[in-house]
Length: 232
Image 1 (spheres, rainbow, N blue to C red):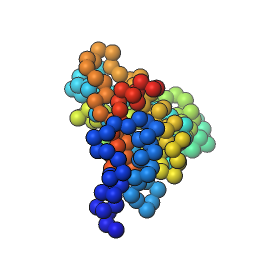
Image 2: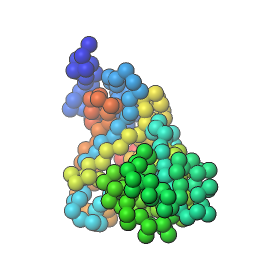
Image 3: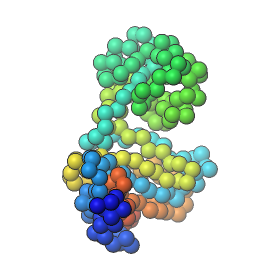
Image 4: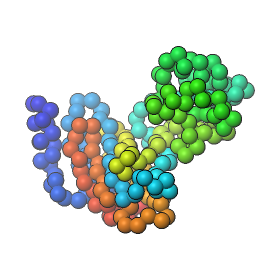
């Protein structure tokens, strides 16, 4: 059976114009997973913000109770007296000038970078490299903190960063199909609540215009936005 046929068979299990509750959408998403591997469960939403207005930019982090099913490789830019602390928390590399030089030479085998505030001034040499890779430490994303141990631990436990793109969209993973309905639903509710709490105070109109749930390569299931956010 081709991927196209699998997709069509999965999509036929629900109404393309129907709006689903959080519970029903999660059940359908898992039921319509089309891959042989353990697919990610993705949430996609379009916001009613104006992305050109700085005060309407949406960027924050949330710790999902069950993580996202992925081992996150973290590096930490810290002074020498905090190297052991960072590594004990789970960072695969930690340090200052040596780590900066290693990245200058092309090493980028990690997923997240964190830094203590006093180290930010030293990252100029690699700011562009990290920025292009989407890994530059930033206070808004929770990756700049004096408590490096707590930051590394939170990221490795399942901290997710959400940030709108130029078209006012948010795209994030909230788990794996193998998690099952209960864990996915709990992760999804925590994620949506965090997004809800970041609604800009001065924006007008609908904050969330559309909300979809899908698995990797699976069909998108449209949720009832009012019901979904009203239940949080």
